[in-house]
Length: 547
Image (cartoon, rainbow, N blue to C red; front, side, top):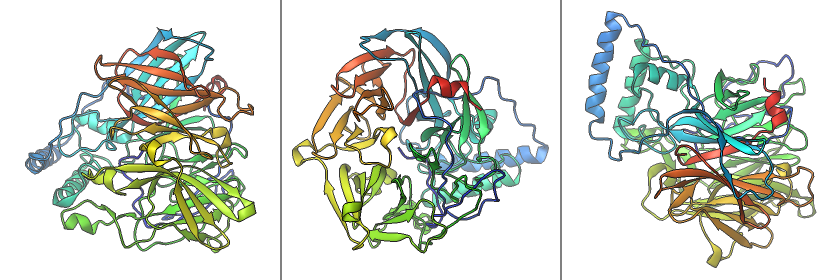
């Protein structure tokens, strides 16, 4: 799902082609990057943390005095802000081998990795579940048994806070609102002025998404560059560091890149767009205000860029509110642009009124009607997940049709009213991304914000099959793992999900047959797996070829 912060610049979709050596990246623009992928994804779940004790910073007398003064100011500022104490986060753990795999029935060995958002330290002020430090959980299947590891991703932010023994970096959603948010920012920059912290090497949490690309497992959030995490031979996790695609990426990148299953290119929205063709290409489409853009979609030929009604208005902080706001006067629209466009002159914008999709599950072309079909979950109220709105949240799986000839759009719910449930976080068969797909596998986000199960939805008929984890059991995003990438049956595979039993305080990995929707296996895990966001799959061959 979302990350602690989204791109806070004006909407500037920007496309660049890069080769070896890459041309210099273009600043201050959003970008798509098509990069040649080395291998297909497979399943693994991971976490990252450090293996050595942090060293305390060595400050001079002026720095010590400044630190004491700023801490006193911060304590006074945040004394009344922490209204919601949180449960203790999961501790990072080394690999545990030979875990029991129950109810095996034809499930073949795979590796699964998923991203969680867990604060290393208990927050001193406001906290949102998008604000936690990135943690990767990894389950590996090998020789009929399973192993599990979890580690914090060693971001520069986490490394510095661990050395200081307390949270220092502002939390983008939970803290940066109103006058106290402005004060928190000023305190943070004052600490930087006295060199008590270093924010020049990134401030992100790497807590929202994972992708395996170009022989690297990348942990991502919208507030920083991706972090390269290596899976060790025994299944543990080790953070390598920030990854900029060999100098191609100089700014933040969203946590939902799209890997084209046919071309092997990776597309991602950010401040630049890349593809390995040897030329630099860019397009820009300025908007009057920064747009909250968490996800996008691709088809065989096009990129679909949402420009919706949730925007960033820093002036709202001066008025005492959140900078993430719903602009009711803005008309949502989707931009359609050729994947390899050299400029923005051929960007086609199609208005889709009153539409906010936090996630887009797939898109494809229907040339016979000159339409692009986009499948996403339309959320109301649009800003509810950022501002803890008391209104009942609805997330309706919808089909949006963009007519490129008329410039008009239509939108309809895919499921009937009697089958309607909130569906958020999930995927289609990734071997068919950007192509016409029949099924989507999505988390049942009820009771919000918990996930009680998942649904397999027929996107053509609206038929829904639901799988629930059990009494007082909740989980995260369902991951669809194809049995055979060349299978003719789109739903030939397994659905995997981490599940936590709140009564027994135990966690497991449940493995469900995607065709029958029956539980086929489960792995009992040695520690609690907190509720998290998105995951990916990594195969044994890919792991053996890691950079």
